[in-house]
Image (cartoon, rainbow, N blue to C red; front, side):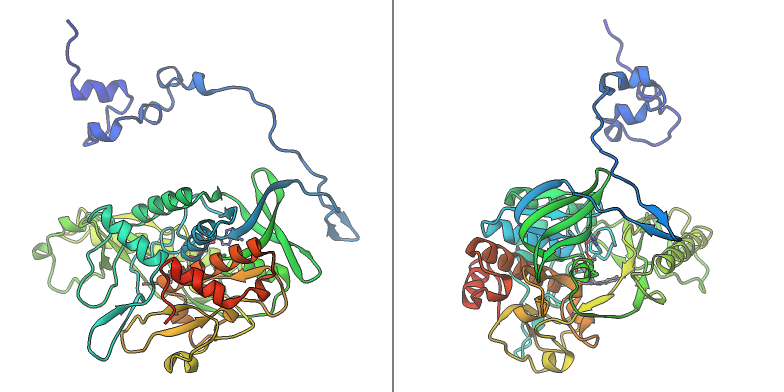
Length: 462
Ligand SMILES: Cc1cc2nc3c(=O)[nH]c(=O)nc-3n(C[C@H](O)[C@H](O)[C@H](O)COP(=O)(O)OP(=O)(O)OC[C@H]3O[C@@H](n4cnc5c(N)ncnc54)[C@H](O)[C@@H]3O)c2cc1C
């Protein structure tokens, strides 16, 4: 008869016998990773196959008179779509889902390997700006449609995925992994063609109209042909390449991180004068996320971002290490740091219409309202966001969503809030789909039809 194997021996066989405290459940299904370094036991051989080269090396740039010259070349067409969305953050995720639900063949191009942008990979976990307080004292949810649906579906995933509603309006905190999984689910449900690890680097433009985008990946530089393009890159990368007008600002560059084992802190053991900023609570009781303002910086300057990122990372590590050396705090640890540095704002479009604080304070009404913003402080009224603030002045078939729409610097801190990015994303996605289906340019789209479809998808337009 076979002898039952002890947990200790099983872990040893898996090649992880020395790892104390690793639960059996955690090892299930991960035998390959656990035995890395011992190919025979891991069964790696069954996965190794010679395959044809999937990439072609194009002619390289060369030097001429001290300049680097890029030779002209034809680019492979990787994909064709009605709508291509560049950037899969809060706004791009919503834009892609909305465009696909409106019946457009939709592609989503994202430079990282997961959706959510600053919300998930930037570990910005609290969703503020969903609601306003009415004169009656009641809170009204204004960022509806896909935003409301997403938060409700997170609630259904359970208390580990999102905090409960609370009484002060709706400002839930989400778990970043739950949010990423749900975004994947909704993108797939809607039938979006998802392309991760792909950087949008240029546009295809004839005259003043776009016919698609160019992206770079491990496979090189390729084209996606599309009737309409949504720039949801957060930084206006695509409208910059399209030649649209914009202004550029610097802002505080934060660096969010998470601390683990906070539920094991025994504050009674710590000296009275030791006070730590543990950040904000999360759905998981054992973790907290620490937000920060950071130094002012240019979020498009690679040298500057790199320096700030290393400075922030070191300081987060030092801070948590100091905590760990304090009685009562020994078990806390730096769980993770953001993979998307906290660039709050960079390029702001100079669009057909520009929204400003002055207009927002009195909730200026527009005949082309496509989204409504709530308030993070509950002191201000809701304000309308017109379609014109998503449109470049001169470029056709390009619609902008999220934190880089046409907004004056004095209003950016309300427009860049997560739920506001989601609602401008939904508006941009529906508009791009309708324009593609109706064979009209994004500029000539009948506004009432756009508003009708947005409302039919649950959006609130004031
Ligand atoms: C430190 C910090 C704290 C914040 N705190 C809060 C808060 O408490 N509550 C709140 O509601 N909001 C907060 N915000 C604001 C909010 O998180 C963001 O403004 C919002 O999430 C932006 O969404 P977005 O889709 O416009 O852009 P992003 O989240 O920046 O998404 C852009 C996406 O596009 C991808 N991308 C970029 N360029 C390219 C390209 N060229 N090709 C392909 N992909 C590309 C990126 O990888 C990313 O996934 C905070 C922001 C920061 C930085």
